[in-house]
Length: 251
Length: 189
Image (cartoon, rainbow over all chains, first blue to last red; front, side, top):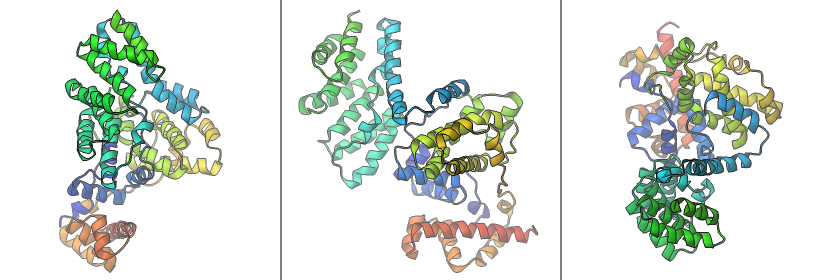
C-alpha cells in the first residue's frame, strides 16, 4: 500500500460536505476519505459531533462573511440582545428588505425580486414535520438542508422523492412547491399549491399566497388578484402582505 | 461576493493578506472554516448563542491577528484558537461579559501552540511503512489494515471486531500516531 494513503492530506470539510456527511449522503469512497481526515482533524471532528447533536446548528450562521465593518458594528449592537431576538431579526430583515426594495422601485420590477417576495418560511417550520417514517428522516433532513442552503433545484428533487413515498404529506408538498417556485419552475410549482388549497386546511393560506406569487411571475395578474383579494379579506398571516401586493399589481 | 479562488491554499491566502491586506481573504477563510469553528465552540460551550458569538469574534479578530501570528497550518491554528477562547470563557463563567472584554491579541497568543505536520512521513517507502505497521499492537494493526488496506468504514470495522465505533476510531488514531513516531524514529528524529 502507498504510504501517502495513510498520511494523505485533504482540505477540511466544506459546509455542504459537513451537512452531507452528517446526513449520510455520501458514497463509500467519499465517506472513507472523510473518515481518514477525521482521524487527524479535531476541528472537523468537533463540527460533526456538534451537528449530530444539533442538526439546526448552522442555520443562524451566515454562509458568507458579512464584512469586517458591518460585522464589527453588528457585534457592538447585538451583544446583550437575546438570541431569539436575533433569530427574529434574521427572519424579518430579508422580508422587510424585500418589501423595501419592492416599494422603492415602484414599477413592474417587482417580478424580478422573486426571492425576496417569497421569503422562505421560518426554519422552525422546516423541522416541524408531520409523522414520518424513520427511513424518511435522513432524506427529510437532506431536503431541509438543501432548502436552507438555497439549493432549491436539488431541494425540489429531494422533496419529490419524499412526496412519492408519502403522497399525503402536506409539508413536503408545500416545500416542493416553494422550492420549484424559487427555482423558477413555475408551472411545476403551481399544481402543488392548487392541491394544497383544495385539500389542506392547514396550508390553505400559504398555498394561496405562493400560488398568487407564481401567477404574478407568469403575468397572470387577474388570477393573482383573486387569490390576493381572498387573503386580504381574511384576518390571517398573509392579510397585510396580500393588501400591499394588490396595490403593487394595480399600479 | 467571493473573489478569491477556492483552489488557493490557506497558507497562500494568508500570504496574500499579509502582502496586500486583501479583505476578501477573510471572507474566504470564513467560508472555509466558520461552520467548523461554530461546531468546536458549540461542543465546548453547549449553546448556539455563545457558539455564534465566539465564532464571529474569532473571525473579527483575524484581521488583526493574521498579520503577525505564526501560522504554519491554518486549520490547526484556528482549532487551537477557538478551543482556547472557549476554555477561557468557560473558566471565566461570564461568557457575555468576556466577549466584550477579551483582549484583542489574546486569541493569537493563546493559539501559539506547536502544529504537527506530516511532511516527512508522507515520503517513506511502502516497505518501511509495512515494517512499522507490524510493530503496532494487534488491535491497532487490525484496525489500520482494515481501514486503509481494505477501505472499510468505522462502522463495518466496528461490526466485524465487535467494538464500539468510537473505540475503532480511537485505535485508528493511536495507530496513526504510533506509526508517525516509528517512522520518525527510522528517520533518526
